[in-house]
Image (tube, rainbow, N blue to C red; front, top):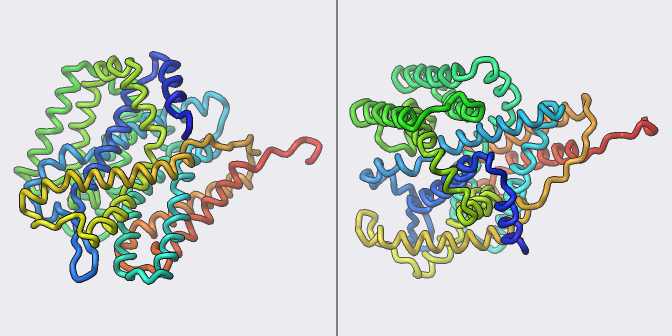
Length: 438
């Protein structure tokens, strides 16, 4: 990471004025708010020599309205769609194909994630050998793996982007509108009529709706004046209030409304999209200053590392602070508990700084992508590799906080992911054969 500051400033100076800088700002802000939100709601206890924890939102119901500010994953998927659409259009213009784009686009996502999949099992094996309590190890591994839920959803959309972008070029705004309708139908069947399984489809439909809006934003289909954008935000907020305060959905935007995503979350997404569009001109103007824009570039340079390791920082901080008595355990409903959130979050941030210093170089390293020969081998290897990676992420994400053996994480998920990542690595770096060798 040596010389990163000079590199960032150089990139900031050379950034063209035509770049939609607020897209990068919203990505960085969204992830940082997710990190802070997770750190705040984790309530750790240490009793009778054992660490345990739970979600403070399950107890402090007065926090529910605050989740409207910290539930910013719709913004992350919005800017993800914008960036994916821009990348896909550029790749197509240069003569690239869909498989080549997927190999390139998934590289930066999977390199830091692979480091997590290698380090966590190794640390878990060492912890088991050192006699660490199995229940404690299970909770720690589960905490560290929480970010994989979001990565799984985002990576699935990245893999589908070539087809989603083609659909966008044909139907435009009709696609996200149709997705919202499907979310409403799935809510009616799953939550209202208790039809099994069907409600889980909103994991795809909801995030797909916002991701497709990112395509529309990039292509100018969401070009609204400030007043129009604010009207969208107000309309979304009115729908959100109607669905939650008046209607049947809970007010909190973490939990019931996100597992799986609900129509109420779509109303929140509409509110956030309106605000992003309303602030777009002012944000771009502010980000033309070297200082703010350099900060955005620096944050985005390591943003995936920050996201992947921020819950590992929680596990490390809990093990260090609570058994030693450094961090007190006041009652959850007390003002003292709220005040102690400040040093708790600061401690998590300190641990995360160390983790980022150790692992960010993996994300910062430039991709090694050779000119890969097109053909059945490359296409088949890419499809199989991505399928194995997604399957591994899914197994780990749904595994829960129980003890899964000495690897900490479910071995089947770890093995599936690592095998898939290895296949993709070979597919990315297998050089084109020369004419003489054919």
